Structure formats: C-alpha cells, structure tokens
Length: 388
Image (cartoon, rainbow, N blue to C red; front, side, top):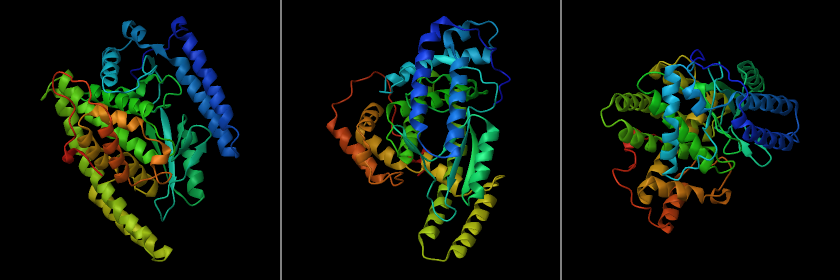
C-alpha cells in the first residue's frame, strides 16, 4: 500500500525518549562492529542502515497516542487498536514479543525496505552477506528503492541472478524495539488477518532465530504464524466471517502458485546437479522458466534468486508440520524451536529441513506437557494448506 493513509508526524514525546535513545546506542554498537567488514558496498550499506533505522525510531509514536489522535485515519486507528490483543495472543503461545510493536511509524512510502538477493545462475547457491554477532544472511534490505535497484544491477553485472523487491515489514530479531509500520496496514476484509500474520511471523523471529540458517528461520516463522493466524481468526471473528473467508481465499490463491514455483525449483535443481555442460544447463533453465512464466502468466521472469527466496519461505513447511503433529500443540513446537542451535544443522544455509523436523519432534517429547487451555486450540495445518 502507499503512505496516503499515514497519520501526521508527531512532536517529540517524552514517554518514548529513553527506549529510543537506548536503541540508538545499541544500533551504534552493532554498526561499529559490522563496519570492520571490508569493501565499499559494506560502507554504503551500513551508512544507509544507520540512517534508515534512525528514521524508523525517530518517527515512532506510542500506539495508544496514535489511536486517540483525532487526526489519525479511522482505518489506521481500528487496526492499531487490535495490536495489544494480538501481542497477548502471541505471548500465550510462547512468542517473545518483548518491546516490539508498542509504537507506530508512519513512513509515507510504499515499502519498509527493498530486499536484494542474488544466486549463482547455474546453481541454487545464494550469495551471503555476513556480519559479526548477527551472522550471515541471504539478502540485504535497503531503505531507499534506488539504492536497492543499484545494488541489484551491480550484482547482475557481476554475473549473478538477482532480485529487488519491496518488503512491508522486517524484524531486527529482538535487537531493537520494532515499531508497527504504516506499510503493514492494508485494506479490505483481510487487513486484520494479514496484520496479525505479520506481527506473529516477525515475533517468531524474535523468539526462534538460528544464525546462518535462513531456510529454517523463514519456514519455521511462516508455518507457526500461519497456524496461529488460522486460529486467531477463528477466535476473534468466527468461522465463516468475512475475515475468515478473505484470509482463506488468499491462501487458496497463493498455495497453488507457490507449489508450481517450488516444482520449478526442484526441476532446475536436478538440472544443476547434473553433469551437463554449462551452456546446456542454461538452455534447459531457459526452457523450464519459459514454461513457468506461461503457466502462471507471470509479468516478471523468475530466476535462481527469486526461486531461492520462494524455497526459503515455503520449502521447509512439511517437516515443520510433521514436527507440529509430534509436538501436539504450537506452544511446545515453539519451545522446541528455542532449543535449536547452530550445531543442530549440518551446514550453513541448510535447505533440507527434514532432519531438523525430526530433531524438533524429538525435543518436544522431552518437554513437559503444556498447560491445559480452554476452547479449541491451533491444530496442525491441513497438508492442502502447506507447500514444500
């Protein structure tokens, strides 16, 4: 969405000055540590990261204040008013909301950041960017669209498959207090389900985050957030409500498309793992992607970077579903996830999550039973609503 519905900028507010300054001190420390990395790109990236994070924190206003402000658009106020209850719901299932989502930042732009990723053109090997303490990531977020586009073009000039796309939200993984962003607020009957899903997804990241393992981190967050969103809609609005129907329709529309993209990923992986010459692999890649574009009527041609991202977010959902079934409830699944360490994975950027699903299932058996809760609880998602 655009920033047309954003509420006006607020004057300085004493109630948020201390945590804001503390967060800035933490940001300066983290950036100073990462600035030891070499290269012009890293200098440029870190400079914009400091400026962008300062902007988010500087615009943040307490949600209660924004809701009470008569100048706040009704659509914005109604969605923000639901956030305390969404946070409390997440806490009930073991999510560490911490200081997050107590404030609101009106950005006045269509995206929070522009995500840039890259991969080898004849292998699903994502390019990595590594930082001290925080670990390695298969993408970078730029606060300015032009910077993101320039980085993508640089990567393509170096021979990589690359993408740049807008992202409505992101998490600092608990390093800083994440505000609710205007880009997270939508319209229509699915606005509140989508907002709840984003908050729950990012809260999973603040609770369970294994360094250097984005395939697990994103698949786990996607599965847990989707399972909790299904249940939250049932509790908050009821089965068959406009919100339930809109959310379910969105899921039904998205899943077949995602399954087709993952199918193309597997086709291409078999090509790349083979022993054919590079030129032959590229020709077969073009044929497979031509078919994919035609089948899905895509306006933008996929490449290894975009397909890797689809795999990151959706390719490991079935092992997480199996672990949920073994655990019995979401809270135990989250607690089991919190026990995972880098040593539980066989390699950095591990994309085969079947062994991790088995580890989660075994860890759940070691946990005490969850406290009994009244009413229906989140159940393992139907296989028809899970891809990968």
